[in-house]
Length: 217
Image (cartoon, rainbow, N blue to C red; front, side, top):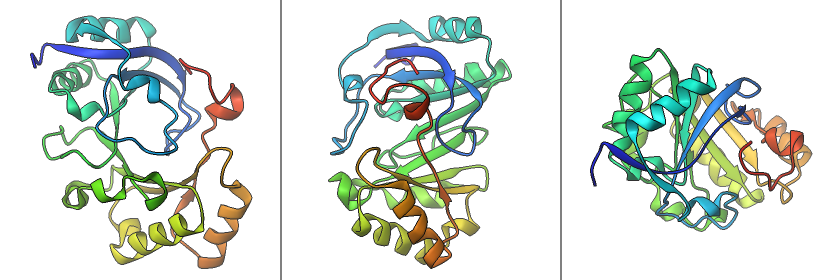
């Protein structure tokens, strides 16, 4: 695929709903395509919908939105080679760049100035067997790891990974996010407190500000 072009699902300005950057204005570039099919996926429309755009056109669209915090997401953004040209262009323009990846694609090629938010897949997703564990060795204190949890089994799995691999001591934030409408946040909070787990409870605040099904937010 020509790295000068990207298949883009949507570009929009919103409030960051997740990660340690939650609550801040953020420009989102959502790329088309994903190699996973998580049971609880809330952006399945990004699997196929989108338009081919030149990287230069994407950069211009982002610049017009006027926000220096930019997240590249999907789908799975690392499936397209052009994402690296996009990242280089954003960094050159002074943006803080976040990239959300499933962890099933190799992150070694990413510019070290990017904040990598890696969504490790728990058993409840149906895709935990796709985690590329060698990616954890690439992460630094500027990066973050997210676990989306559907139930107690997912929590215990995540807890064992966090403690067994000393994730809290290696990355900037460890995030535990309940599947919206499926796992009660208060229940997840009680588990975290009971275990004194070194992790942050994360709610998808955009789903509380707007409709959980809303696009472009």
